[in-house]
Image 1: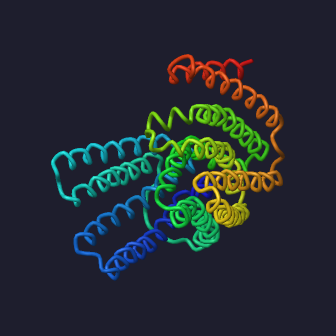
Image 2: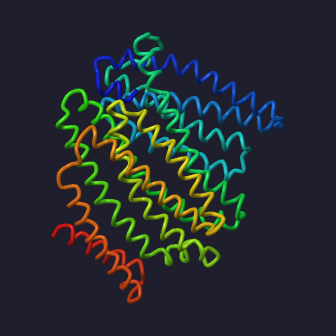
Image 3: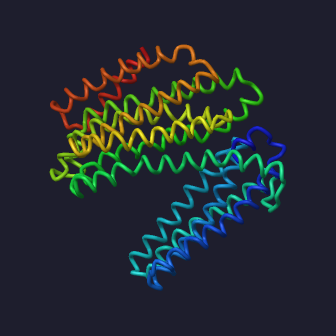
Length: 393
């Protein structure tokens, strides 16, 4: 949806109407499947009632994604930003009240519905502001185009889910819950920073989609800028957390999680490849190479499972961290080589990487020494200053 709207803004009304027609049908199937599955699994009435509410939230969010997706295609992300912040605020406020007043689980789940309802009405209002009306209809040519493109995207989503969670499943099965706890901490810290490249990708994807049809020289320029920004952002985060891993774990989580320090020091370097993958993945998807992206996702999933099966029995949480690092690097390198068929590697990107690496290394040395001389939060400020000066130089 985002890609097609970005390429042909004049067809946005027809595209959104067709997508809404598809979602109305598939949403009904999904809701029915969720409820029937819960019913035949023998869940008690209370659980079924809560699932019914949660399913309604799922449907609202599905339509919200469509409406905000159209706005992304028009390269207007302001409405989505406002909608998300206010929607999460509504959920938070009502959720706190539900806890303080000891309300039922129905009320607690309803807080999610209030946030989704806000986004539903606000996104409809935003669409109308840009001259698009969320009507339902099916246009055969658009339907076929979207259906063909959606299958690789769907498979990519499945592959990502599997290789993002299979390590925890295997770790629990082979080494027990304690190792899962040690591994979950660095895993969550690492993935918490994904919002940065995801935010960049939200703006990048429609821009690349439009440029692919209108100005391919600009597409290469935008792609190069995205890679540069990703490098400049991710290296100080990675080196800084690696240098302060013992302090972060012991201060925030306590001595019980001392065995999470080494997994964090390993896992955090996978963040580099996560950051660099997002622009590459956006380039492939925006230029009709979603099948190639999906193939690499599937191979990466298989590689991840194999490395986890080999490393977890030997090294536990450390082995799972090594497997994650290797597979993130594999995914980025494979997709980058394919992306270079579309546009050459931007000029100066290797130089940017080397200079940023030198600056991040200098920063890490300052942090490592500084944390022994002063409270470690102060060493973060010193490291940030050193990184900034080195980059400027």
